[in-house]
Image: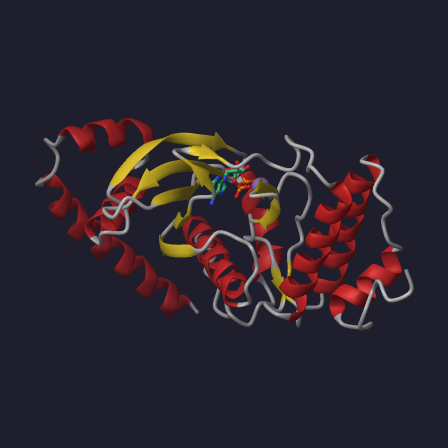
Length: 270
Ligand code: ADP
Ligand code: MN
């Protein structure tokens, strides 16, 4: 363990040294000066890495600043709109909370205690989860790239205006939207093998009259012991939100079985 940590520290140090050298050449660019005011040095370096790779072409303003991350609007060379989610690396409070969503995940067996690396793992976890969701055909943002604490995904919305959250806009047909949301939850669980764990009107966007499920960083593989508890919580949130819109919500227990694969057809007796 100690050896591995030494190795990690050494590779961090070398990487920084190399990138500082590479950065100096760019220091006079206007772009660099603007970015420098907003990002810490390592985040700025990561950003430049993504520029270099061609993942990002132009970065515009922030869409939203949350507790864990800030999301920016950007575009790619071909004009595709991007959402850039940048996790804060300086706020320590939520790192403790993150560990319980990383530990026991077979995808992340060796977890560093280095606070920055925990954030990097968190970023990668969200990327991987979004990929699983996309592969299963979930209506969620397509992940495009990630580096360190920066996640790049398809932008949901148009011309830099993000799609409204379900929280901000009641769906036209709440009953239909409820049913669609449940279908997404089932597909997420059974198709992608994921339990969302933070599903609510805050993490569902309304786009083209359909639910878009996002913010998947805390989502767990269904093989994880915590998965069932997460699904139960998600069902409660969803039923609570739609209940207030006078939707006829389904029994929690019945829903749980249906989402996790216990029953075939939820609506057969209605
Ligand atoms: P957190 O809740 O951890 O702050 P979210 O992933 O929920 O982070 O993103 C914060 C906000 O950024 C969302 O409420 C949404 O408005 C916006 N957002 C996130 N991802 C996208 C995306 N792919 N396209 C458009 N807007 C997005
Ligand atoms: Mn969120």
